[in-house]
Length: 504
Image (cartoon, rainbow, N blue to C red; front, side, top):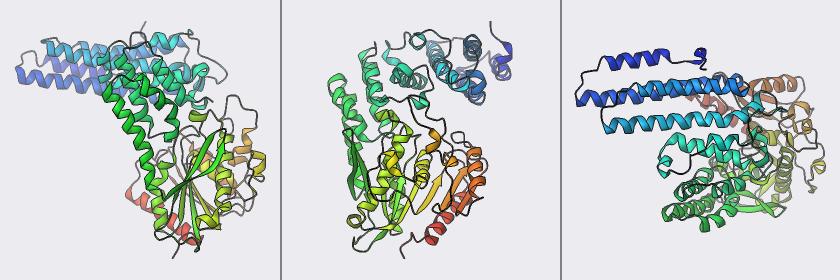
């Protein structure tokens, strides 16, 4: 039974119905306009439903399955009713309606796919949703035999999330953010193993490369690339895969040079180095190190290339680093911290060869990369984290954007350590390097309350801590005014000048 309280679009539906009633007598032009009205009304309703699910997600996804299903049923049926009120006049009308209903179907199938993972997240991390073991397969039943479906945006979005779920293997009913598996390889195997039309499989293998190449270092695709050359039958898609893989390597030509700073478990981790123009290595320059964000699970050094190019204009040697990520290597946050500590120590150990002043090492991080930067200044003994270098891993200055200050409890699977040992909020002490920090007050990824707690705590010490927070903005400072962007630029430049990181 549909819960009438969950209908959120009666006004839109009524307005649309009235619009149709007013156009019973139409010519070909008004018929075209009517179709446009239908498309816009359908899209608006889907957007409203999506906004409703997003805003209410903690309540919707923490419901028991029957109530959740009733909610999604009501939302889906509201769109279906809107579309089906359009009177079929021609074959073109039928095609339009079929297209709108297809998009609607897969939009809501995606909500259903989200349920077990988000139930685990919002209801209780120790409790699994009460659904059958083949729940996901049942939701997607009959979705892979028709190649024409790949033309639909919501279909592609739905299938891509289904593949993310399959990549989680035994953790697929859990909160996916912290799954400790090599999910990028698992994802490829999930596509290749689909009981699907070959064109559908080829398309999503191609998508695996072209979408994710912006999210992971190119080495993460070595396994999939070797298999794709054998698995993909569509020559057009295969060429796109080859071009994408090549681009992943070629984009690194922007760096002055790339050097391995660590090899562990047959994994080579690289430092992507940018030198100032006419860099004389006998004239030691400050170092500006960049740790990218991505929740310790995704990301790549190339995200920092633009910032690196900006840093060298101020005379600094800029370096962006690889580190082991959960989705690529199945590692935990502590492992990534170890790599960050090793990277900073490597810079000092190789300072002469790089033309770097070992006493002028600035570390700049965004989101999870900011946590890596900050925690590196707080760890007393890096050897406790497996760092073998005798050189210091402590930065001389820090710039933090959208930093997770409290990571306690974020690793929830298969760990055997206290996550407070990598959580900056619990490790504040005197004599930290100077810090410049920015945070958005509407950050949904890293709660503003974390920033406030850290700020209040560190201001009780004698440490140098300069910060700005921004109301109305999200994690990536989206919606920033030109005035706000200019303020952040000025604060960064003043910080760099004050602490000796601009070469005059």
